Image 1 (spheres, rainbow over the protein chains, first blue to last red):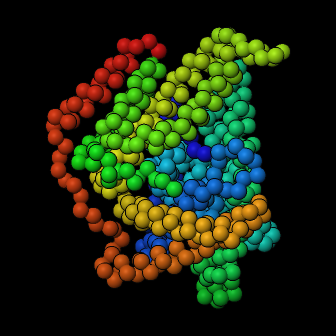
Image 2: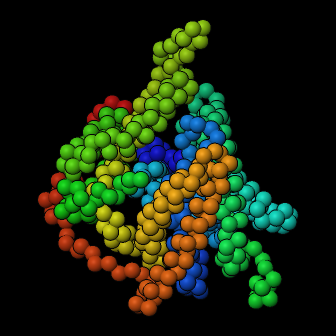
Image 3: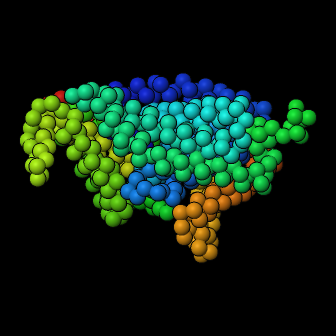
Amino acid sequence: MHIMEGFLPPMWAGFWFLMSMPVVAYGLVQLSKLVKEKPEIKSLLAVAGAFAFVLSALKLPSPVTGSCSHPTGTGLGAICFGPAITSVLATIVLLYQALFLAHGGLTTLGANIFSMGIAGPVVAYVVFKACQKANIGLMPAVFLAAALGDWATYVTTSVQLAVAFPAAVGGTVASFKIFATIFAVTQVPLAIAEGIVTALIVKYITQVRVDVLEQLKVIVSSKAVSGS
Amino acid sequence: MQFLEQFTLTNKLNGVSGKLKTLFAVLTLLVCSFSTAYIVPLLVFCIMFAVTVVVAGIPLRFYAKLVLAPAGFGLVTFVLMMFFFGKEPFFSVHAGNLTLTATKDGFDMALISVGRMLGSVSCLLFLALTTPMADIFALLKKLKLPDVFIDLSMLIYRYIFIMVQEALRMEYAQKMRLGYSDVKGSFRALSLLAGNLFVRSWDNADKMLTAMNSRGYEGIIHVLEDDSPIPRMHLLGLAGFELVLVSLNLILPR
């Protein structure tokens, strides 16, 4: 669940815009480079973006009832395109979520980009690369990356809310505990669910279209090695 | 699944310039989120509600459902902030042998935060329910955002609707075959759906891009835009309205 429209005080809303914009700008530079080099990749980028939107609109089979969260859908993007380009995709997706579903908002767009488009994907990417180095196999790597990336998004959201609304007694730490209980703890089962679903999606793609993942250099095949 | 966007072409404000509507929504949103008096956001909420439901003719039931989620979230936040975020005692609630003390500063913080949120949400809903995406794309272009960003947004916009439709069809087919009957089956069904959706949509997108390329697509989709200027009277009225809101903020106690 994103931070609701107008919920952050204006100073913090502006701060998170300032934090996210450089990353998104860098992502845009990388994106233009990628599209110029390989114009045909645009269809994949568009589908990945729309896919994240559709996933977040679907309901995850949640083991905990009453939890209002949904998958972030950005783990897959981070694994495929890296965090910078994913931040651009997330920006577009968040804009549409605000306009089509009234999830999140325009003033809180900066903060939501930072949590869902930057913090989550960076964690997912780093975890995925580390798992590949450790050679623990594709499925566990994807699972860990997506689950931890999803969870990192919600921990970031709790931090954002805590620094914006410190408690009078105990300050930011005390209010972080409260927000983290609402967002991050209830999110654990959902993060695991997102990890499982993302891993199963990647498994399905490896079964029917391995070439997709090879092209994106997510997995290295014998053909790709000889080709490059 | 109902998207807010479906009302943008059928509401009664369809004839009004998209630029004016966006300006109205965004300026009011800004004033609302900078408000220091809690009455201003609540006033904004009432005005936006009236404009969206009465003037634009969005069905009340649909609107109420949309407001329900932020309102519920607001209620939870309100209680939390009132009891846990302040110092000064305000009043106490006794429930059995448990005593909860509400705080004055927590109450004030809750009032302004939740008020601002509700006011802002109503601005967003106005924009989302009355302004077609095409007008917003035109505005993004005016703001000189990079072509690749706008182009990708347009493609994603197109794909969202195709994919949602396809996802719902697949889900329906899976449900007919007991696809979501238990937790394990739900995971299997959902990931089959998502994986299949991803691969199929990519195939289709590839075909579409080839078709577009053979028709002269060069990385930007050109759309005919409404270039008519906003009537000066409308702009003056809008400026007057925002000024009233700002001055209300200055006059009213915090």
